[in-house]
Image 1 (cartoon, rainbow, N blue to C red):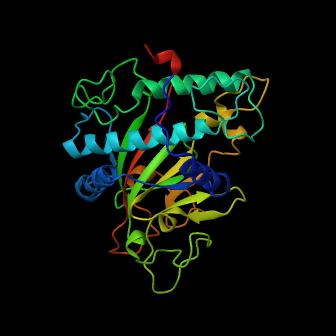
Image 2: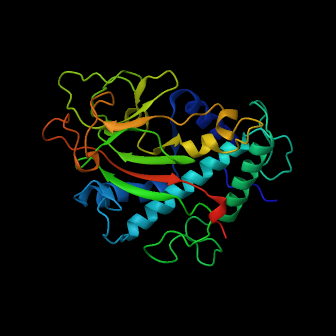
Length: 312
């Protein structure tokens, strides 16, 4: 079978090393991906006048702009490539060339994990090279302009969001996903200090003279909150593992994919202080801890999910 559309082994090694310790990884973006995400966050998200696209209010139509569709395709490519990179390193008891071999190590395969590994491998083969919507592709996103997937396509349970944190916030939570990929437009990326000015490893202690604004905080393996916005470069996206990957491959006879790779679904929040009191109706309220007049981050995110029972 063809090799998966995965990142290089060295890039996958770096991603996995970061995920094991910090709970998030910073991955570099191809030029077209970066341009699509910069446009969506700086134009669409910044001007939408509410917290989230698709909108939080039920019953409103979901209408994608051209730049929104491009951003979806961009994040879908990143997410599927990252998943492929993880599978390259997933231990297997019976490698048949589908994934290009195992890097060794880990805790061993097991029937449940081998089955999950093959399932994701087959799904990724179906979308290989086609996430950009190339004409004539068997797999193509947005055959209908406001519907990313057709029923029965691999990963069709995945969803995309734009966020504007001048209009809302996110309390601490863990994502129900295989992977979450986030691209952020933040002042931290421009060298402007936030509430943790010196290092992404610092605790969330505001520094005198620096404006307080929302940031993406991720809890690492030791339970320390890290400011991911200050760790990521402007040409990178943030990747996190979700609960779906923790569950993938568990059948009672062995460990799952995430545990075999030493990965965990990280708790995260977009707040001024992730340890602060819970914000009620957070999707409709800017963090009250923000200083007056500051402009908060905008971001684009994809939640990558795959349910084989819903694939035609």
